[in-house]
Length: 402
Image (cartoon, rainbow, N blue to C red; front, side, top):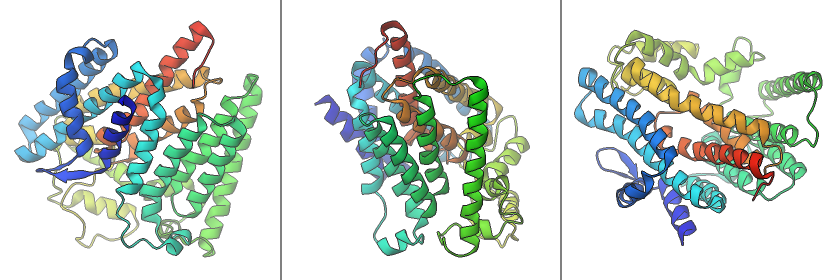
């Protein structure tokens, strides 16, 4: 019954309603759940640590909004992102501490939710295969496949996991989901080496790393050639064709994730208190800079809101340096957990799950909209937290459980 409840709640994170701002049915259920379970939740040492870190973040946001508010509704929406991130993460940690068996159901629910609640009324399967539905492939198909493969990876052997992740990753890249496909492919490679029976000497590991990086770049060059020749026609490949040097992956990163670099400028423009949640780009300074990074001239189009496309920079752009520091403390804590777990989890059946979650946690933290802090990041964070705790138990018992 508990597992069904967890599945049901996580699934309903995909169904949104508007009450002055978007909120999911899953979040409403978690809020009610939190009120009924608070006494039991408060006994958790991890919740006590988390709540203090989130409290610092929320207080920094409240302080900022007192000085630079863009209206009460926007201020509340910005603060609620952090509150519901804490509630979502608390909900998942609470049940994983009781039973690790709920992890596959969380992953499956997330994958199915992404697909079921996708807007696919006009989706053409032939166009999708041909690369003309890259929006759906990037936003729905690649994440759904990622969650389902991480679930399967708990039960399959490492060779099969690596093959599946690599094959799915290459397919997603060809279909237009470059970052989503890259996460899958890198997870396959990383998982294979992390589960090696014998620890590789540092020199051998360095040699392998160089070979892998060279192979990845060679595949990137092959991919670019196929795009330029017209053999791959996914919808976002105009970015590659518009680059001065398409064989420079860093130039592609700047072009494809230009909002991140615009966000750095916006952060330093109002370093102390930020621009306020859901700030308006009244002067169009940031939209002009964004379009310039695309190699184009600004024509006055675009939304009136500031182009913020990063959870991490969003803290600073919206609410200034204190919020940025508070958010980074949370982010760095989970990064440290993930790295420690990866170093010592070679025999864990969750190693592919951990690798995929950590890669997505990093990428979404850097390059996804602030709303991901309450929607997807808690799922990756709880996987990291679980694997970190499992690693500590393994050191005592020398035994992993599926």
